[in-house]
Image 1 (cartoon, helix red, strand yellow):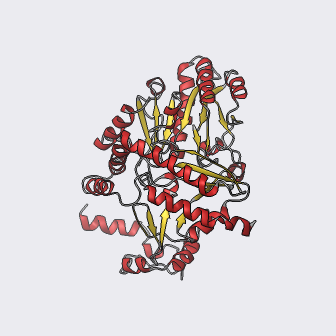
Image 2: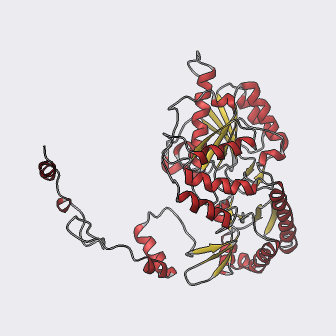
Length: 452
């Protein structure tokens, strides 16, 4: 069949695009073959004011986010800017993601150079940056192997699957291997269905029930309850955050984590540390669990690893990895050359002992400042945290204070039950910038009285 004949046959067997049913008068470009398609006007997009962006977001994006009424259009270091040029000091870091701040030159160089070489080929092939990043993670942790994902919730999903597969692998003759999980109050492990089942806040789970069964929530820090349940032999894994972020900046005790480790060893359960927020230098340790001298069978990572690009990782021992066979799990995008090159540039900096020491030093400095400036306020119940992961617990809602800070040029977050101000700035923040943040927080404290 000649090429013209083939084209003629094809064109008559497929309905032309102009016959497809589409809603009319929706303000969209008609992209049928017989019309020119107007390219987006990038200059117009960049010149949109904040109000226009907020109005258009409400028209086109699913309303799942209760966003702050601010549009962020650029950033440098620890500063962010809106389209009108207003400056904000960033003490949120994209929810503990931008460890190196905004526009770090080495990070930009790594991303730009890799984008010019190779961005994505899938996990059907070997790629150099993925292997290089895995070598760094393994060489600086308890782990023997890494499974890459695209986010923290995906890293926890992988850990859930690996836990159940592991139990079947080591008990091949057991028709009912351990499949259940323990997690704790104030926990947050993600929003996909498996990780959601491990997340304690009921309002996150209830609209989507039934979620994955077999999960028990115990009081964070309750050693006796955990040991008793682990001993029943049906627990595939225990998931715990050494320092809880979303839950309110609560730190585990050494005794608690040691007890979990011992009980899991005795019962054959796996111990999983979720360090999605508290890992990768946030506490002043490369891994939060290093401070306790207790080591897991698996650890999940994400937020700061690629400095703002989507990545997650599940780190495992060889014992766990031996249970995982080809095809047991996978991801199209995970561990791409582009993202892994970005992550290598981040990891090379934050794993440096002098960098880790600076995080600890700045964290101590900030907590001292906050105690001096906020400690005497009757609404402030406690200032806690490690490194640059700090919580200010209040006896009222933190939202009025967060809003007042934003209006004064400081971006902070809430945590816990909405009564904790969460500070997770870029790890490169200076002491001068921390002092400025503490001053704004102090100046905005009256907002708590005005609103409550």
